[in-house]
Image (cartoon, rainbow, N blue to C red; front, side, top):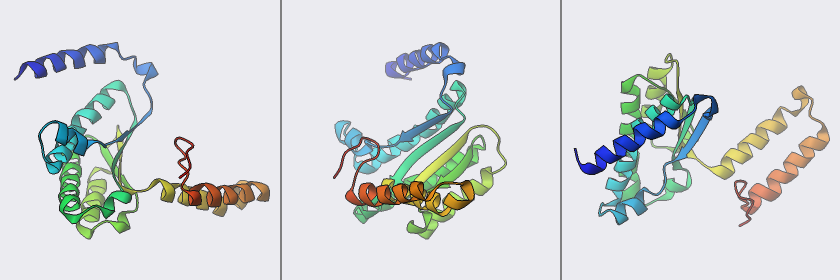
Length: 199
């Protein structure tokens, strides 16, 4: 065990003691991003960077569980990333498959895949569905595994759902018109809902 591990372990314990479970968020979303940059900065290849990120998922979930978080969303792979070069995408998909299968084997967390799974290779989708089935009865921390998600697609789907459910929920036609107009102008223009930018 190196000095960094000892120092990090002490820091982790100190931080955990300082957390007030009454103030813990109920839902934590984590975008596993920056693994390529981390890999370059630390002398690893891209695959090594992705694997290093995946190797921290169990620790992250344990920390969230310890803090009293009820739901974690892991944003692993966007639909935009499905357009990456096959030399990078294939190993990344295998890393995701292994990571999800290992999380299921732990038997500690309920896994729920989200995203456009139909856009994924069959073998990846099968691993995600098997993990969900294997952990369906587990109580406690729920983990959304977002693979094949896309911000614009998610917004368009949400607005479409809202419009389809407008009558039974009592939304007025004015609300539906506003939502429809917003979806066409904002989502269609490339606006970023998260930060309000266009383009």
